[in-house]
Length: 270
Ligand SMILES: C[S@@+](CC[C@H](N)C(=O)[O-])C[C@H]1O[C@@H](n2cnc3c(N)ncnc32)[C@H](O)[C@@H]1O
Image (tube, rainbow, N blue to C red; front, side, top):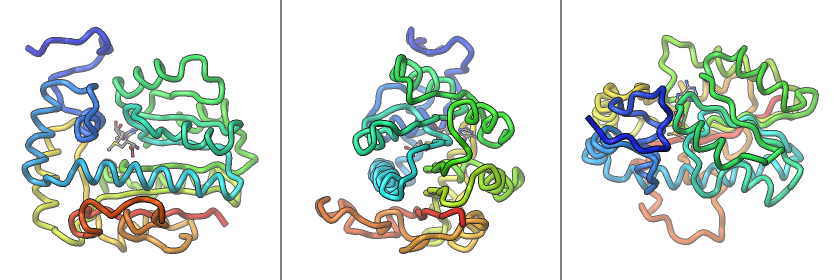
């Protein structure tokens, strides 16, 4: 039996590894349990670059949020928002537009508890404990905090690959698209099996023991998921190649798309 820290919500099974807490571990966070660390260590054996991938994903998040603000979009629905770490969506958005509103959504109780702690008293943010596949509940909660008559940026960073094909991820994306007006945005990053299908399959095998399984997808499959949106330049590309920040230093993995094995895109609601 693992020691239960005081901050662990009562209703979670800390013996069952969760993607949110494994990702927190890759990023060097402390909101993970022994079971999360054990499975994350297995994942690191298969894919030692995982911490770099997690950091590159946060870099894409930063650039995509800044892009949204530059397009005048000041409302964000962050689906699968994760355990707060530095450079959260509200920090980036508020540094550029202090009036921006952000709704964070996650189905992991630890992610939700920490997000609520961090954001207590911040009136421009809200945290919803829900499954993004339950689009009706998520949208009802979001409607209470965001104005859906104005553009909203729907964010799905490193989360759609936790929605298996049998749960119809395309229909999920479509439901959020239907709920938003033209000029709204969708930002997506997604693991791909285009480069190293066998190693990606090993990662899927590792995540089978977690609360949510991993589904790597190919370029066309991911593009199909973005169906109703018009993908803005440079298109669906390796995560590090999406409008890279000219000020950031050399890429730690030499810009090798294979080692990242993740695509990113921003779509616009026409
Ligand atoms: C890899 S983390 C990414 C966190 C954050 N979006 C980022 O990019 O830094 C994936 C997050 O999605 C959440 N998640 C997975 N499936 C979900 C679902 N069906 N509904 C809501 N959240 C989900 C996990 O709990 C986890 O916090």
